[in-house]
Image (cartoon, rainbow, N blue to C red; front, side, top):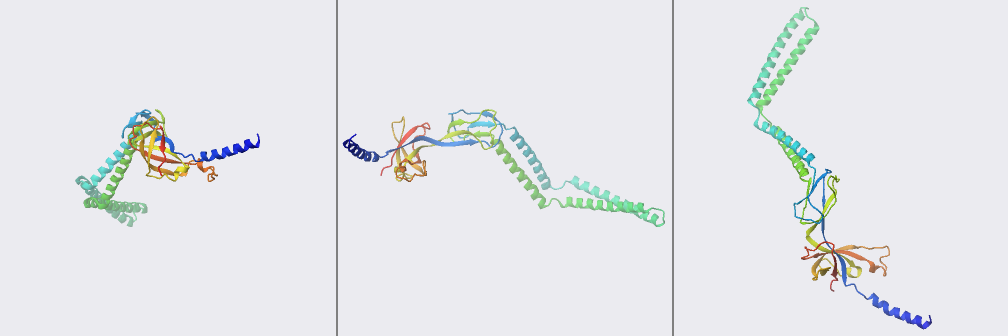
Length: 318
């Protein structure tokens, strides 16, 4: 190749390169998306029913799947019994002592007094006999112990009767009321655990995927199904670096979806502050053009379109 050919090629490359470098990106490509709602379980009970299939439309409250509820039902029954016990105890304290209980306490006190009188007389006779040297020290000690015991029993019976006559104290009532409230809280918690063995759709949408099968035991906190919400359709697009500075949340942009003749009006909701591709040499002039930023554009009247469709968003006007 002679020098004339080399010079001609160099001139041609100079003319071509500026033209290539002045090409401007006029669209941003992406896909149509919806909010993904992940449904999780809170127990490791086995799945006993799956009420939906992939791609099925659901409304808020529709059953998606159900776990075995035997354990949760037993827990509810147990707490209900505890509540009945606590409620009965509170009612008893509010009513106060029964007449039968008071009569019983009086009878116990009378018996204790009679036993104390008998022990006192026996002790007196033993002391007289011991003084004449006709009784042992052991017998005297035993009768004295019996007398002291009978006095203590009489005192206890007297206190029990006085407690019944005075009725229920304010502190006892407050303790019983607090016990009922504590059991009510446990019952509410047990009811929530039972209710959550049924996983329902929180929003209207389409079931994207059920991730488990009948009989499987997902761990607590595991996602078992995904619902694509109908409430909001949006375009997820990649913004080239040269457009990023002119794209701000709130900008109006036309979006064209593959297979649809008309354009949809959209509003930029969010633009990522971090580039999707950021190599260590990203700040060089050559590689800055390779950067892109993720953005989401809310679309109007696009709720009937399926997710995942390719689309193009026009660049914002200057």
